[in-house]
Amino acid sequence: MGVLSVLKDVMLGSSAFSYVNKNNQTYWLHETQSHKVTLYFFNKVEDKAIPLPKGYYVVESPKTALPVLKKEKL
Image 1 (cartoon, rainbow, N blue to C red):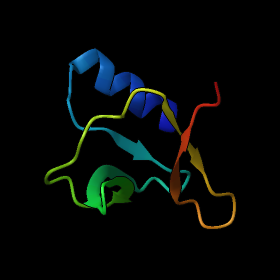
Image 2: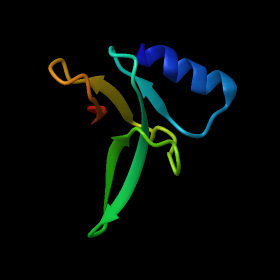
Image 3: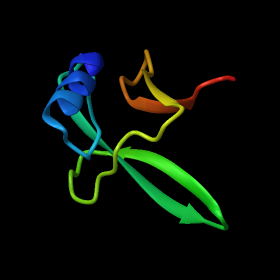
Image 4: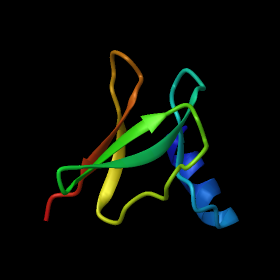
């Protein structure tokens, strides 16, 4: 279901990235700065959500169904 969410965002031109897990719950991608490091996290609140950063992809935890952002290996 997460892939469908990505396709929907791309087709509609949405700037905020959302992910729908296997339990049909929607999570929105957010970021925060901590000591010159950008931390990405998912939240159920759409407010201030960001687009998917270039070079990252989403996987779903098999046990908890929570989305996790992963960095592509070069």
